[in-house]
Image 1 (spheres, rainbow over the protein chains, first blue to last red):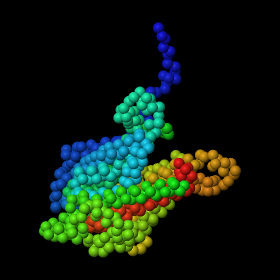
Image 2 (image 1 turned 135 degrees about the horizontal axis):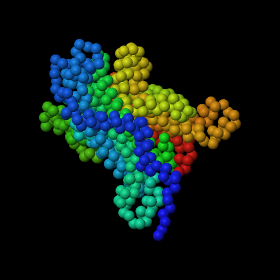
Image 3 (image 1 turned 180 degrees about the vertical axis):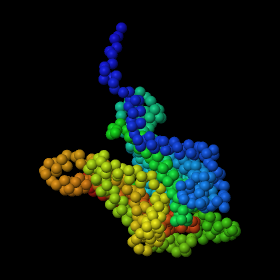
Image 4 (image 1 turned 180 degrees about the horizontal axis):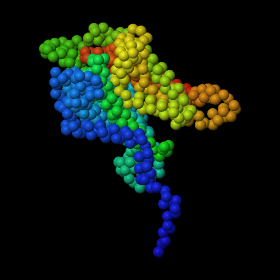
Length: 301
Length: 305
């Protein structure tokens, strides 16, 4: 009967990898704060129909431009905690519903661009050589076209709607996915376990899906957060220029745009949706930075 | 070196041609450009005459060849709205945008390089943390919102700067800040990372061991090497900024290429839109070509590989 040697004291005291990861996650203030804020905004978006005090489209013209609750004005009422806009629509309700637009566009555009970019990047990094040259050419071509300009030109030609904005952004911002996935795949591809899989006769699809993808997943998540934030900022900019989401939809970028004529008298009208955008993008970025720090094999702190 | 340059140049030309093809086919996204131009009240005959007048009845490849051939000679056709040669209008507006882009770049580098160096000298110090916070906040701020906020405080509440127009240098201060802050985080992180790497190199230890003054070591030995990637980043970002200036120019009513692009899109002025996209893309291609050549010249490892 084979005797199994007892674990040494050091092995017992050494925490498991899962415990180490948990410790890193909860020790990372940015990751925790970012995730918490993002979860709150997602909840706001999901629960918008139930938690909104008013209909976001309801115009009450004798209740225009009521300032938020913290202002010292006779018009202030607890019925409109964040006040009303120039058409008498409840600002808090529009803010809740606007979170849906930002998150929907950010997430869908990220998904589309992620699929395109990852496909190009992984194929280029795995096959190398001529395939890599062609992929590089496609990436360079895409990079040389100015995103905002091309996006608004295309949106204006096709006609703007939520779907159009999602597709235009998704088809435009895959470059970072491709660049990062390409170099990550190249690194993983030269490792021994990929060679071993090739030697045992695994198919290319199987190697890519089960050997390469899981090992570049952390890079993928980080880029996904960056591009989701990017898409949200681009949608806001497009809507601000009048070539994104159309009125009366409560897009945060559009809310800033609609209020800019009144911003010198009622600065809070642009401050509130702008701050919401800022917080959303900040929380996504903090989460992405956190995931990068927590999963990076070296330079953990 | 020569073969590297030649190959790099060949790729640049191919990319430019592909971009021109994409730009040209863009106008067919709306379906028939003649219908779009004619407007809603047009009769069948109006549409037909517009189609023949602008040559939209010819095969697409012939149209593209014709357009490209003329574009190479600097002829982008007539603006549908302004009834002036497109090239002339672009040429008039381009200097303003270039000026804005340069000011924004200078602002970004003047802010980010010293901050990056300071952060690298004392990692994890108060300065490093402050720089990091500025970077994180800067990346999350919507540019149009930042521009409006600047306008509100500097222009209206404190009355320091004019809020719109492009007549004097003072008009360029706020737009440059609004446009330039966007690349500050990246430039700062790159300077910091470069300096950290260089400062731990052997030749820096040698320079210090020789008893050189810390300032000399820092600026003559370290920064010179650490700044290389920042220069190529700056070239690339300059191209991005010209494309992104559309938002800032529209807000501050600066009479540059971005504002022209926005106006042309509102007026459905197709030749103008095509030309602006093409000009900015080609400009970006030239910038990256320049940056690559500069890098190859400064760093032998690139041109040999």
